[in-house]
Length: 385
Ligand SMILES: Cc1ncc(COP(=O)(O)O)c(C=O)c1O
Image 1 (tube, rainbow, N blue to C red):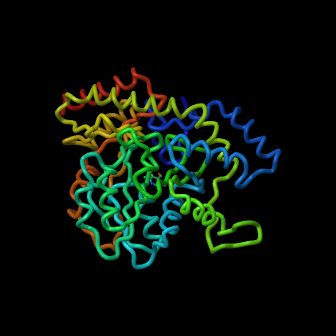
Image 2: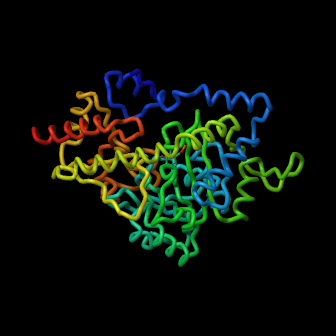
Image 3: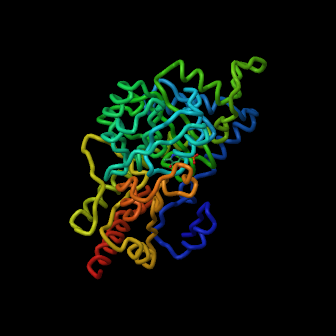
């Protein structure tokens, strides 16, 4: 099967890979049904903040047990607007993990605030027990990331936020359908932000994002903030931004949510548990700790290997298996973070996981047989090395 990836270089490298990390073509094999929905949008001329957007916001809020959903242009805007709705900017500090996609930290920096990193735990999530130590007079918010779709320790984070009067902005880009001890994650903080980038579990044909909240006042303000602060065509309440989810993308999201998302979530969970089962006896591998009462949705599936990580990846690629690293350089060691004056050793867990992490394909299209094959190849590699 032909593999198309949005990064051309990646596509060229992966031509020979049979078990892929992403299946962008297959994700939308029934695209004609979606085009039909989109043609209705076009016929109505309903391009911005129209019916499809309203349907999406209503349904995603219901699905995630939130009072309100505010759709926006992408997941990075969702984070940025969440900071801005609280007036966070110059002189403020926001606590966040150094291990995430760069957009989490970037949203803090572009808001004008300073990111203050707190190390992660073995499950890649922020270490809730280290947060209090990082709080200063300038701290305004905590921005945890539910990495790979495993919710952070929200009860503890919520208690800390309450004690120090901080806002919680949950970067939930990986966490559609996740549950924290049977509860909606939206319950534990002010705002939850999501991305619908094509590689996310719920995805659209380009960029898209949304924010969930139970706070009606915040919801009203965010609705204005994403649309120039306009109350109506002629009245501007305050100066805002233009970050709307296109109606065309909302039509795609509505189709996927209705017809596919249950299957995507269930298959990813099933696949991840099978990987856990087949790899748990390999003493060269450290699995991510699981908690029974937490519903993880496995946007990514990681293992950590005790040695020869890069050789293992090379070996798997030679066997047509696409293994990746999400991500090899923690944010505090990126060139872009130079102004924060961090050095190697500042966040040892994030650094160790970045050096030892392997991300395996866990998506809804991988078959049980392929998972057995991937695990056999991993076990074979360690038998030989
Ligand atoms: C954890 C995390 N936060 C934020 C984002 C940004 O989302 P977007 O690409 O929609 O702006 C992503 C996207 O990859 C992400 O993985």
